[in-house]
Length: 427
Image 1 (cartoon, rainbow, N blue to C red):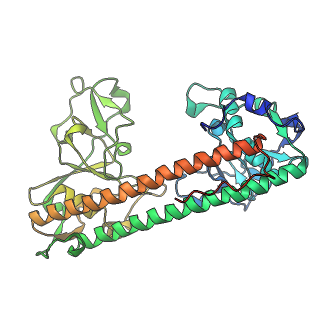
Image 2: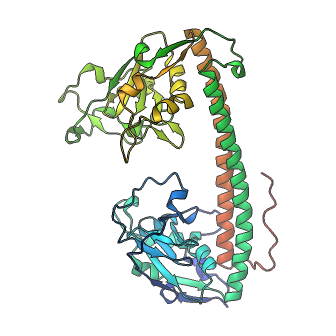
Image 3: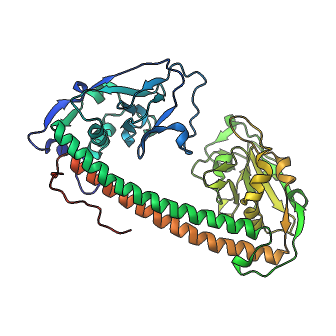
């Protein structure tokens, strides 16, 4: 929430007197045109508005095989995700396409400028009202009723003033977007450079880490590690208390994530010892192994224990000749990905098999050098993470300022015709 403005209906009531207050239903009308073929799928994002679904790599919702019920969207239509309106997931579309039947699509009256309505309905006072009106047991099941939505009071300045506000916000928001994008590119370039260092280091080119040359021997994973696939624990026997099961959802990029935990009562349902994890084990998610941040592989630490290995996760335990921290870097290299990517099975969800893991060949130096390489890469990664965290914090500050600016402009907190450009900060 913006700290600059009180997010309540009172903000709307304080708008300029010459702005009309009208019911939203007078300028929006629901449209449910379906059966339109050959149009791209669209999605609604809180931060990005309506965008083509295939333009994003962070949307894992699978479209239906039958698109006949998907709704047609024209440029200038209002699109609203009822389940996420309380987060601000609604926008006026600039694209033609189709959206899920779960969305609402509305045509707009000529009495409103589409871009003004886009900014207004996504501003914090309105998002606050969507939260109040949405109903459901849990936040991810909250639903905004269309009749409640259309009954909201709309702030409606004269059309020429709407256009001035829109032009001002397009210009100012554009400055924010360009700086955010530039910083994101810097972060991405640094991450790409780190990936190059990893790829070089695990193939013997260690000069960037100030590590002397060594003798490197080609080996297979299966020769230096014992590999174990997880146990198929039946969900009907999950317990409220017991030993955590390490499932695919718990394997992140470089770390184990226990935000989503299920447990197993070993006293009632004993499990063979080979499924008990130990500190130093390497675990690898076998379904959808690569995500946007890299390969889902992590080293189990003492704080993660006790834990049991669940199906669709592979565990690797070294024979003493390999550093598991070094092996994690090998798995995170482009060489491993290139080697196995074409062999992945699974149509909708890529799957990495145990045989593919065990048969992977790579270069292995002596154990002391492995440890030096792993430690050097850890130091490099900490620098990358620190920079990325700083970029993320700056992004959040800029987005906060952008939200405050939009709220002030669309609720009449200041006159945009006399406003000076707010973009004066150097980041």
